[in-house]
Image (tube, rainbow, N blue to C red; front, side, top):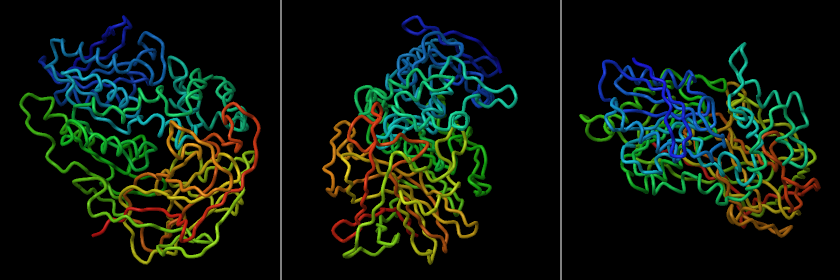
Length: 550
């Protein structure tokens, strides 16, 4: 393998530091690009580059603009990733060692840079491998259900300067969410929210910018990949994990891409993995077996070869959807997502905290009081620094008065939940605006734990008609809210129970609704809200699950 150190000059003169890994002997090779804000010496990127070089591919790892050895000023996401990616492809296509075919690959932010480059339509860009993509910025990264994610503190502190600061002792980031909260336990209760980003030793310069765009406006639209798939005309390998907080993003990107050019050449691969995908077979206290970890580099090469090698023909020869089904711990291939054999069935909410398949009758509403001064805890522990949630830590089943808990009877047989899950909630509040959070979980009868089925969902009431058109509530009026709870593929064992948790805030990961109808990020006045959840024949609140038959 040959290693070159290059600077690629972008159209505005900014130099982008790039490491080039070339196979031996000399020749003309297909090239994979990884553009990263985490440093081009990142061990995962280097391991990928070395493996691909050993298997006949050139690899270019590049520091994005303003990070590490690249020139320029760093602005997360809004960072010239489209034009810098296009200019990188152009430079590669003219090199003597290039066969003229280029692909992008990478996880999280790296996948975002690949999508942005693909929107430019450079003829040399042939394919993209997008692992656990940090796309869907408004809906899945910053404003889940229109509610700002304070977990952006995690990422914001990691990338707050040109170089990420890590410990010499263990190589872990110096600034983590847990450390911030440990040193300043009241920081996330501070009002106004807009000042939180300046409370730390490492300020986040983009904090106020993110909070200036509470609605899904043009700032987000230009970077929302899912809005621009009509411009992405190449095959994409969508790779995700059921325990990744971007799980739904991988699936939504795949489904959207199937409606545009190169539809037949889209592929979806979903493992049991968290955001650090394909690293280990156990997660959240569960061992998922010998098939859980795969040779992912080899699978990616199989996907890329038909588009990158002059001697290859035809796309990857397998059905477009390959998923790992947890519980049976086996891989399965399907022609679509969700599989055609899936039946959607509602689980209805009933008084007394009961979840049941039967339709409700004349039944009373349930209620609780949400007080922003208390800020209801999110019902699980913090988890790893780079993840806002870690399934497996269990729901807090305490008798708090600011949440509602529901559960089924123990299942008399295994239940295969494979597909999307959503909540239809009929609810009222005495406030002009409030928030709703929901999580679905399953009770592990063997280990006595309650484990999340998906990452759950949330909705700020003012965005019930759309995230670009906020509208306050009429206090006391019943509204129906549709809240996506995510996707899963799990066989829940017999004897387990399905649990639902409803509440109106989620400390420490999400900012609070102050219940006033005012500016939740710049105001300091708060008020309590009485929340009523309806569960009768006229207002049948329910969880819609996808059940795999056969």
